[in-house]
Length: 205
Image (tube, rainbow, N blue to C red; front, side, top):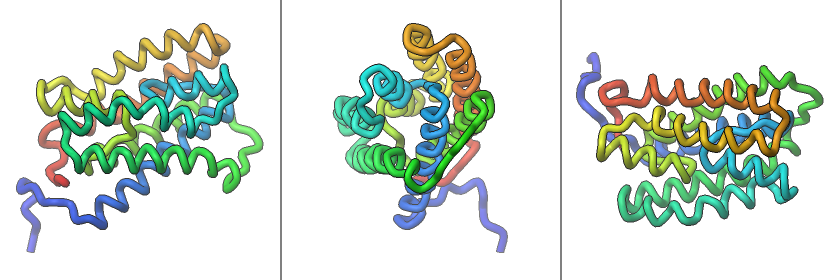
């Protein structure tokens, strides 16, 4: 029997768990690519990367701490299931980014390749989480809230916020690294903007 693709179907628990694991692994690998060549991105991940470069504090600790205030919005506006999933996803990204360098030895990677492929990996990972009512925290939470309640496209809103963070990167990183970071941010946000919109995907959690 051909499934009715127009009728939304609820994700099962194991499907949510699988999506959260895959999504956070993709995001984490993209972040490791960026850290390898001193790039940054937008949202709380970009802020955590910049602070890591300046302070030397590991990304995972910074990323987890920066996201803490956003859980209030997640609970109040998006509900406990979304907040719990997001808390778990942020924890997984913190864990994976701390351990991937021990699992994967990257001797050399071209900055442009790291920017484009890393941005693509993060975009696909975030898209996977969005479709299962989860996120990697921070601006992602605010972006989802604005899209679901006011019709503001999550990808475009996040692109604007990311632009502010990337401008701040000019005070921390060499100009060429900021340019590469901007290219990666465009890839990341275009993946979300073109794929996460009403009617494009009908499953729900």
